[in-house]
Image 1 (cartoon, rainbow, N blue to C red):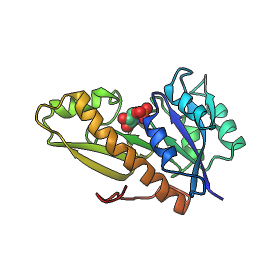
Image 2: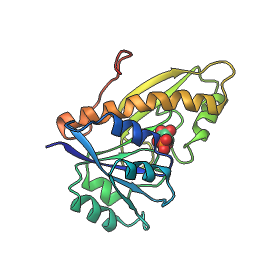
Image 3: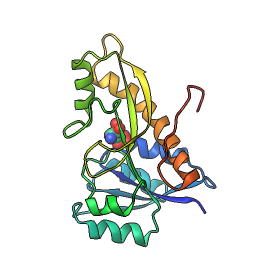
Image 4: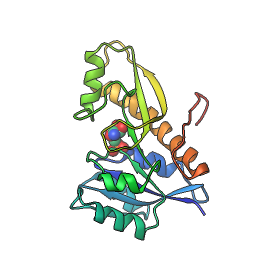
Length: 200
Ligand code: GRF
Protein backbone atom coordinates (compact mmCIF):
# COMPACT_ATOMS: atom_id res chain seq x y z
CA UNK A 1 0.00 0.00 0.00
CA UNK A 2 1.80 3.17 -1.12
CA UNK A 3 1.72 6.45 0.76
CA UNK A 4 -1.05 8.61 -0.77
CA UNK A 5 0.33 12.09 -1.45
CA UNK A 6 -1.53 15.34 -2.15
CA UNK A 7 0.50 18.12 -3.81
CA UNK A 8 -0.51 21.78 -3.37
CA UNK A 9 0.49 24.10 -6.23
CA UNK A 10 -0.02 27.69 -7.38
CA UNK A 11 2.20 27.86 -10.47
CA UNK A 12 3.54 25.96 -13.43
CA UNK A 13 4.25 22.79 -11.43
CA UNK A 14 7.78 21.82 -12.44
CA UNK A 15 8.30 20.42 -8.92
CA UNK A 16 5.06 18.47 -9.22
CA UNK A 17 6.25 17.06 -12.54
CA UNK A 18 9.65 16.10 -11.12
CA UNK A 19 7.93 14.36 -8.21
CA UNK A 20 5.45 12.45 -10.38
CA UNK A 21 8.26 11.37 -12.70
CA UNK A 22 10.26 10.13 -9.70
CA UNK A 23 7.37 7.93 -8.46
CA UNK A 24 6.58 5.36 -11.16
CA UNK A 25 3.78 2.86 -10.49
CA UNK A 26 4.76 0.51 -7.66
CA UNK A 27 6.70 3.22 -5.78
CA UNK A 28 6.31 3.52 -2.00
CA UNK A 29 4.42 6.80 -2.58
CA UNK A 30 1.98 8.02 -5.21
CA UNK A 31 0.66 11.49 -6.01
CA UNK A 32 -3.12 10.96 -6.01
CA UNK A 33 -4.40 14.53 -5.68
CA UNK A 34 -3.26 17.97 -6.84
CA UNK A 35 -4.76 21.00 -5.08
CA UNK A 36 -4.54 24.64 -6.06
CA UNK A 37 -5.88 28.01 -5.02
CA UNK A 38 -5.82 29.03 -8.69
CA UNK A 39 -7.92 27.49 -11.46
CA UNK A 40 -5.36 28.71 -14.02
CA UNK A 41 -2.31 27.07 -12.42
CA UNK A 42 -0.37 25.29 -15.16
CA UNK A 43 0.35 22.51 -12.68
CA UNK A 44 -3.32 21.47 -12.83
CA UNK A 45 -3.02 20.86 -16.56
CA UNK A 46 0.02 18.66 -15.98
CA UNK A 47 -1.81 16.71 -13.26
CA UNK A 48 -4.77 16.12 -15.57
CA UNK A 49 -2.41 14.95 -18.32
CA UNK A 50 -1.19 12.28 -15.85
CA UNK A 51 -4.71 11.24 -14.84
CA UNK A 52 -4.24 12.68 -11.33
CA UNK A 53 -7.32 14.14 -9.61
CA UNK A 54 -7.23 17.95 -9.32
CA UNK A 55 -9.20 20.31 -7.13
CA UNK A 56 -9.32 24.10 -6.91
CA UNK A 57 -9.99 25.19 -3.34
CA UNK A 58 -11.96 28.41 -3.56
CA UNK A 59 -11.92 29.15 0.14
CA UNK A 60 -8.29 28.30 0.86
CA UNK A 61 -8.60 29.57 4.44
CA UNK A 62 -11.41 27.15 5.30
CA UNK A 63 -9.98 24.20 7.23
CA UNK A 64 -13.18 22.18 6.86
CA UNK A 65 -12.88 22.18 3.06
CA UNK A 66 -9.25 21.01 3.32
CA UNK A 67 -9.97 18.33 5.89
CA UNK A 68 -13.00 16.99 4.03
CA UNK A 69 -10.95 16.62 0.86
CA UNK A 70 -7.85 15.13 2.49
CA UNK A 71 -9.90 12.67 4.50
CA UNK A 72 -12.24 11.52 1.71
CA UNK A 73 -9.18 10.89 -0.50
CA UNK A 74 -7.37 9.09 2.35
CA UNK A 75 -4.37 11.40 1.98
CA UNK A 76 -1.38 10.34 4.11
CA UNK A 77 1.08 13.12 3.25
CA UNK A 78 0.91 16.64 1.83
CA UNK A 79 3.58 18.36 -0.28
CA UNK A 80 3.59 22.14 -0.92
CA UNK A 81 5.33 22.76 -4.24
CA UNK A 82 5.12 26.39 -5.18
CA UNK A 83 2.01 26.88 -3.05
CA UNK A 84 1.72 30.53 -2.13
CA UNK A 85 -0.95 30.43 0.54
CA UNK A 86 -0.90 29.65 4.26
CA UNK A 87 -2.19 26.26 5.36
CA UNK A 88 -4.95 26.62 7.96
CA UNK A 89 -3.60 25.82 11.43
CA UNK A 90 -6.22 23.10 11.93
CA UNK A 91 -4.94 21.33 8.83
CA UNK A 92 -1.32 21.53 10.02
CA UNK A 93 -2.40 20.08 13.37
CA UNK A 94 -4.34 17.28 11.67
CA UNK A 95 -1.22 16.20 9.75
CA UNK A 96 1.69 16.44 12.23
CA UNK A 97 5.04 15.70 10.49
CA UNK A 98 3.05 14.96 7.36
CA UNK A 99 3.15 18.26 5.48
CA UNK A 100 6.39 19.43 3.83
CA UNK A 101 7.33 22.47 1.77
CA UNK A 102 10.16 23.13 -0.64
CA UNK A 103 11.72 26.57 -0.54
CA UNK A 104 14.21 27.88 -3.14
CA UNK A 105 16.89 29.04 -0.70
CA UNK A 106 19.07 27.71 2.11
CA UNK A 107 16.74 28.29 5.07
CA UNK A 108 16.85 29.88 7.56
CA UNK A 109 18.34 32.47 5.19
CA UNK A 110 15.92 34.18 2.79
CA UNK A 111 12.67 32.73 4.08
CA UNK A 112 9.49 34.13 5.56
CA UNK A 113 6.69 36.37 4.28
CA UNK A 114 7.33 37.86 0.84
CA UNK A 115 10.20 35.46 0.18
CA UNK A 116 8.93 33.59 -2.86
CA UNK A 117 9.77 33.32 -6.54
CA UNK A 118 12.40 35.73 -7.87
CA UNK A 119 12.28 37.78 -4.65
CA UNK A 120 14.25 35.02 -2.98
CA UNK A 121 17.02 34.98 -5.57
CA UNK A 122 17.18 38.78 -5.70
CA UNK A 123 17.73 38.77 -1.92
CA UNK A 124 20.50 36.15 -2.22
CA UNK A 125 22.27 38.25 -4.87
CA UNK A 126 21.73 41.46 -2.91
CA UNK A 127 23.36 39.86 0.13
CA UNK A 128 26.33 38.79 -1.98
CA UNK A 129 25.99 35.15 -0.92
CA UNK A 130 28.45 32.81 -2.64
CA UNK A 131 25.98 29.95 -2.64
CA UNK A 132 22.28 29.28 -2.58
CA UNK A 133 20.15 26.18 -2.88
CA UNK A 134 16.88 24.59 -1.84
CA UNK A 135 15.40 23.46 1.45
CA UNK A 136 12.67 20.98 2.35
CA UNK A 137 11.14 21.57 5.77
CA UNK A 138 8.19 20.48 7.85
CA UNK A 139 5.23 22.85 7.50
CA UNK A 140 4.17 24.50 10.72
CA UNK A 141 1.72 27.33 11.28
CA UNK A 142 4.27 29.97 10.27
CA UNK A 143 5.85 30.53 6.85
CA UNK A 144 9.11 28.63 6.27
CA UNK A 145 9.60 28.06 10.01
CA UNK A 146 9.37 24.29 10.43
CA UNK A 147 12.24 21.86 11.14
CA UNK A 148 14.59 21.53 8.19
CA UNK A 149 14.65 18.00 6.72
CA UNK A 150 17.13 18.39 3.89
CA UNK A 151 18.99 21.01 1.88
CA UNK A 152 21.02 21.05 -1.33
CA UNK A 153 23.49 23.76 -2.36
CA UNK A 154 24.32 25.42 -5.68
CA UNK A 155 26.98 28.06 -6.33
CA UNK A 156 26.11 31.66 -7.05
CA UNK A 157 28.14 32.49 -10.16
CA UNK A 158 29.60 35.81 -11.28
CA UNK A 159 27.13 37.51 -13.56
CA UNK A 160 24.15 35.60 -12.13
CA UNK A 161 20.82 37.30 -12.43
CA UNK A 162 17.83 36.32 -10.32
CA UNK A 163 16.60 34.36 -13.34
CA UNK A 164 19.83 32.40 -13.92
CA UNK A 165 20.12 31.61 -10.22
CA UNK A 166 16.45 30.58 -10.10
CA UNK A 167 17.02 28.06 -12.87
CA UNK A 168 20.07 26.56 -11.13
CA UNK A 169 18.14 26.29 -7.84
CA UNK A 170 15.07 24.82 -9.57
CA UNK A 171 17.20 22.04 -11.03
CA UNK A 172 18.33 20.99 -7.55
CA UNK A 173 14.79 21.29 -6.20
CA UNK A 174 13.74 18.70 -8.73
CA UNK A 175 16.13 16.24 -7.08
CA UNK A 176 15.58 17.32 -3.48
CA UNK A 177 11.80 17.05 -3.34
CA UNK A 178 11.53 13.48 -4.67
CA UNK A 179 14.23 12.42 -2.19
CA UNK A 180 12.21 13.97 0.64
CA UNK A 181 9.02 12.15 -0.36
CA UNK A 182 10.81 8.83 -0.87
CA UNK A 183 12.37 9.14 2.60
CA UNK A 184 8.96 9.91 4.13
CA UNK A 185 7.31 7.00 2.30
CA UNK A 186 9.64 4.60 4.03
CA UNK A 187 8.48 5.74 7.47
CA UNK A 188 5.03 7.26 6.86
CA UNK A 189 6.02 10.74 8.05
CA UNK A 190 8.52 13.52 7.22
CA UNK A 191 12.07 12.53 8.13
CA UNK A 192 15.52 14.11 7.68
CA UNK A 193 17.24 12.99 4.46
CA UNK A 194 20.19 13.85 2.21
CA UNK A 195 20.86 13.70 -1.52
CA UNK A 196 24.39 12.86 -2.58
CA UNK A 197 25.98 14.15 -5.76
CA UNK A 198 25.67 10.70 -7.33
CA UNK A 199 21.93 10.28 -6.72
CA UNK A 200 19.93 10.59 -9.98
C1 GRF B 1 9.79 26.60 -6.69
O1 GRF B 1 10.92 27.43 -6.80
C2 GRF B 1 9.56 26.30 -5.23
O2 GRF B 1 10.74 26.18 -4.47
C3 GRF B 1 8.81 27.51 -4.79
O3 GRF B 1 7.95 27.84 -5.86
C4 GRF B 1 8.53 27.35 -7.06
C5 GRF B 1 7.53 26.43 -7.68
O4 GRF B 1 7.88 26.19 -8.99
N1 GRF B 1 8.06 27.21 -3.58
P1 GRF B 1 7.01 25.10 -9.78
O5 GRF B 1 5.57 25.59 -9.80
O6 GRF B 1 7.14 23.80 -9.05
O7 GRF B 1 7.66 25.06 -11.15
